[in-house]
Length: 402
Image 1 (tube, rainbow, N blue to C red):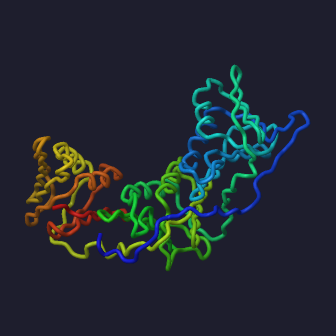
Image 2: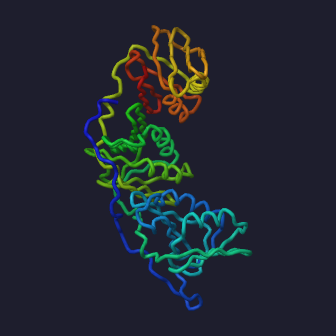
């Protein structure tokens, strides 16, 4: 989308902000050298480790960041992970703490042990030299590290923030995240743009070929908002947040600051740096007028595109759309795959319009909508982007192909 404005910068790894001291070493007269001892329900601990592992460093930032950190105190346990760009604090449920403290857990080995074990309950006994996971019939000893060397993940203490229901936010993420760019050296589009005001939250994503925008009412606490800012939350952080939102009725708190963002649910806090650089003027690429307004239903439209796309190949990634009176004809051709022609009755009484699209960019949008949803597509000509929208404040703009 060519009306984009100011060049931006890629994210760069920086020192992770330390917001407090990590839990130090604990000792027990009966457990020489023990930093932490607790008993976990295996399946719950496995689920927590798998979820937190999404924030574990996948590149060589610091060796310790390939691990998880567990902090146990007063009958509760918090699992932490970070790659210095994003981080998570996750409450682990069904835990009995015998010795309060902290432990470093090798991520891949811990997840593998928890996955393969047949015990319902496992004991974790760890210090700075080793980490021991023990069941009724087996035990696994892994190298340990000093928990004090693990950077702290910020907790949520903001008094100014927005609130959204988890089910609503999850739907907003899924309606936009697929449209974000995977890489772009010029613009800050490798994530989702957040726009917050006193009454609503708007999420925006684009990769230059399509644009997804969704809006929903939100509750504002204090003087919190994004006026004058273009905060872009990285795709990785948004995907992690989506995984955390398991209870659709819980409330999510969002605090966006100049360089970072915090999300708080009942069970988790997610921290993320913002993508550096300025976001393009996305409103400029939404067509302001059209020559045809076509009502469609998501389910049948999705099926017709999926059927016609069978005959596309790597060289001809396009489907031809012909909108006639009361009928849509979709055709595709591949030199090695063959030819497809699909017809779909539609409620349209305007002039004939022909336009070509890469089916991928329409299918990805349609899959995140309910099949019963009514969708309006506005078209101008075969060179102008198509403007699709629903009655619940979802907008999708997609470029045609030649």
